[in-house]
Length: 324
Ligand code: PBG
Image 1 (tube, rainbow, N blue to C red):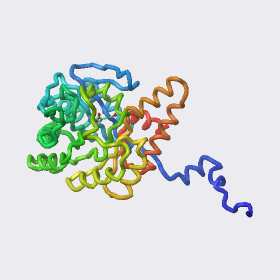
Image 2 (image 1 turned 135 degrees about the vertical axis):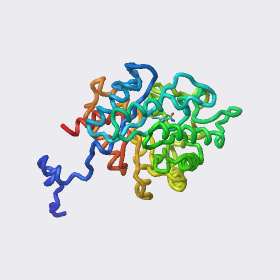
Image 3 (image 1 turned 60 degrees about the horizontal axis):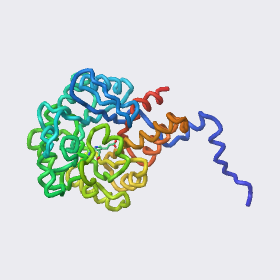
Image 4 (image 1 turned 90 degrees about the vertical axis):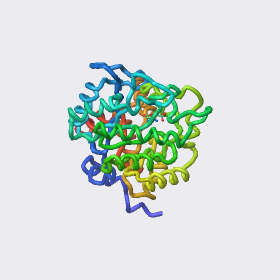
């Protein structure tokens, strides 16, 4: 063989050349910061499994949303830790519930930031499942009514977007219908469309106190082995009215992100979940990984796979790293 005429290294020689041929560029605009709201004032409980993250009272949620906004992050997604739990998760749809108060606090302090709310019951049910339990089973259709109530109460509180994460069948349609009927036809739905039953959610369940008290979520979240089913799930959510579709988790599912991107043209979100965050933090604490570089490489990979936006606990750190 002749010595190659094409030498890829020619365009890697200097940083300026590398910048010129870079295919994927991460921006603060690509990121959404998840926050955990709890009752009280000036409360800041560290989350042991997620160093750098806290359960925050609504005043501090608003402060951190302001920090994120100042770092160039366009959106936060709010999770709530309610004062009390019951079998039907009624605290999830109270007018003065924790997420409803957090939405109001953020909108009052940072009116222009996009406030997304996670719509689910698992943080609010005493059994920790994402739906109503009937005879040891998670009942799909009776749950839809409650999810619609939750989404509607978030919209009434001022949420700019709702994000159902429960994986019940038909919930996007149920929520769309409820929002439209009550005058919230311009509130978009970000559907956790292909959400897998993943052990990478472990640290989150400690953060949100939402671990199931019996069994697991395999009867509603997807089997990690499946990808064709993910495409069907996404198609279904689009047909029901989803405005943004999501794949979750992200890093072990880059193939799913890529396939969904090829097949569908809706804006695509990927959730860089708690376990993905905690592994990097742990590796860095042990001195085994360069945290900033692994963080940026992971986020860039998620975007390269095809995600338009990334829900990530690294949002502020990454935005600051981008600003140099
Ligand atoms: C609630 C919900 C979960 C996550 C987001 N929304 C947990 C779960 O499904 O058990 C996980 C987020 C993360 O791990 O960062 N249903």
